[in-house]
Image (cartoon, rainbow, N blue to C red; front, side):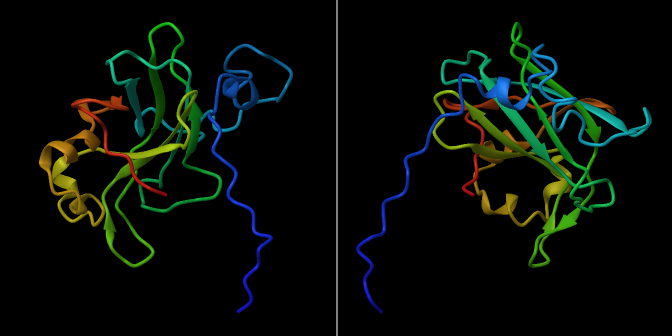
Length: 192
């Protein structure tokens, strides 16, 4: 095989801020008439109150301070465990005063990996912000008991680390999921 000396090195990563919200969620931050609606405002349209759950949380930096200049995207399957091209995606940012994020969705069901391994109900989080050179990817699981046969989660051996991926159940319809970028409570992040 001939060596091609005309191959250039990979372009360095860029951070996502400080104007990521303007380009991706202009209506959300009050800039009107760019797009009719922002992509990903709701992960599932027409959610009945009976099926809807609410997830709130805060993304914290290494000093345990809220990170405001961040954009979050989530992806999940439906309650039957089916991923769809037009459902399950949501994009949002935290409140610029409190640092808290909140979104409504449905609880996903069990699903399978491409190789048939079980995946417990979870929501994938994709996080970009100023100062973060590569997107951070993590998961939120709903119930530790549901995760006993989860192939990916069982790869994590330390219980304390594994618990960073389990949401705190407030009641039947509300969950709290804080994400820590660094420090003693650092959330598990996955390579992609």
